[in-house]
Length: 224
Length: 196
Image 1 (cartoon, rainbow over the protein chains, first blue to last red):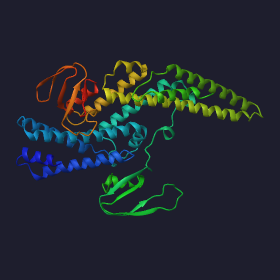
Image 2: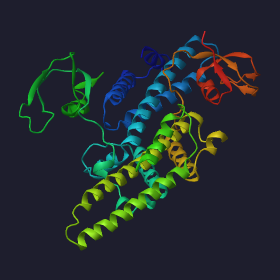
Image 3: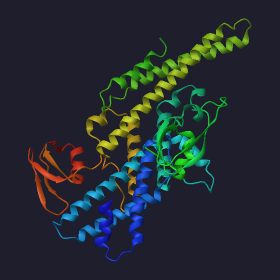
Image 4: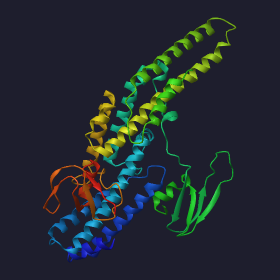
């Protein structure tokens, strides 16, 4: 983190504090999004803006480095920092691709039911990847097996066969702020004992993922 | 026994060594499909008989049983295909868009086509990231050091490092190079990372 700020201090002489902050903030936000994505069983909202912003940042840092003298000690430190940021970005995007591939049917189904004002689940590029992927996998199954089966076995029921993320999986989390009266719905529908929990800032919990979805999206809790 | 051949397909995949792709078992698939159509025809006949005469309710349990076998066969076949695709996907990430011939030989025609499609989708996705694109198959592990010790496993020839100097990569020579530059060469099996 420090190296990132320094690179700004040193190489953008006179650059404003605001810019400096946003670069650092964007990185920490991206890191949080990355960890959340890593530990959440379901695909979270896209943070394509953050990714684009950091990619631009890397590009800028690399350009700045090119202007530095050869053999300058700082180059190595900054290169290391760039490598680290690039790892976080790639890992984040890889995690998302993995989930998209695994749950492609479910995700595309949700995407098609998404209303205009709802937050974007997939970035534009991810969406077109998901569509191409889904289509090719289905085509593959059809050509090799399904077309050769008796007629009433040729169609697959999405509800029954497509893998879905397990939202009842338990996750570790840390509260970022005090949050009173979080309603934990019972796991079974006929279980009447809904629970209410107060989350205390900076404490850690283990809970089912499902009731937490809005809190994660909101940034009120981070998965760890 | 019904369903044995389908199970055999799945087991064959499961027994294959980690990270390898067994040859596409076209014959096995064909046999399962044949069994499936036999079962289906028998079921059709029984259902017809059951509806045309009274007192044939006892046929129903057989119909039910065959139907379950049919569902199981369908599921096993799809699982076979799906898991093979998972391995093939893994290969794309490991080797890039050109596969070594020994793997290619074990893929069916359809699978090669699928691989090309997948490879293309992935490549165009990666190209669309940022201004110049971002290769997600790189940076697979958290970076620890900027430079790493590598040893050449075979003659590669001249290699230009990022700062413009030339290094000759000869078999068994050792170098201290930028990690980010070595990664692709390591994956292609030209360099080996030496852990000291």
